[in-house]
Image (cartoon, rainbow, N blue to C red; front, side):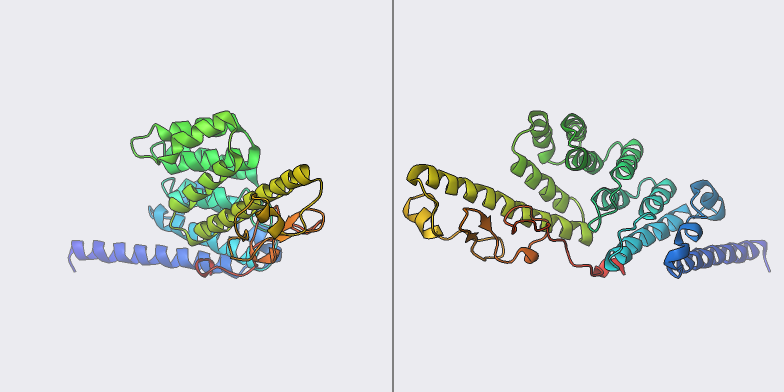
Length: 311
């Protein structure tokens, strides 16, 4: 047998062993029970150790940890668990192994920060992840966008949000909304318009099904919140003009305040309540709304079912 052939056979054997070991690691994590997950899933938390064990195939291990992070979030959400303690470590290891794995940062920004059951309730971890992403990918406008989005939605830090959007707007390849968002943050203006632009840009800038669906649901909720706010303002104008509350939407239409019957994004007419409040007909059908709910009702959340890409 020639020396070249021996070298090739050894290389193939090493590669096969590495891939088999990586897959075995993933399978082992998948079968860990909830009670022991904290101890056993994180014993390979060190990216330095993983780099040595990978024999140069850090990209392969990063993909495995990335897949596990998505599966883990989907499983916990499906099971109705509010415990997402492994999500941040899994994403940290993923991005340390491959700092250029951009979807991991956007996934982290969308699902680490929000409170359970929509997310892990770890805005600090999300912020650290995004700063790490910007540091290692300073040419990617999406990461500056995610950073600004996080500062705005979770921390209400308009100055830092404006700075992140402005930095992203300076890049050779960027999004047309970035300078507009920077200006709006600096002025603290247009809450509905700003939030709509943020979620639209989130939808536009990713191919991840979970993130896109999350953005769509928030856009629908924003439309309801804005509609209800506007209609309740109209009711108040009617009362100020007539000295009484309208008995129906028809009263508002006859007075020239509205045209037609206002409906939610699902096509269901809004309800005018006797006390002048506006409610949606089926609150459970539109997730994340904060307006138009019966008194004391909590904002509805998406059903706890596994997404196709989280299985």
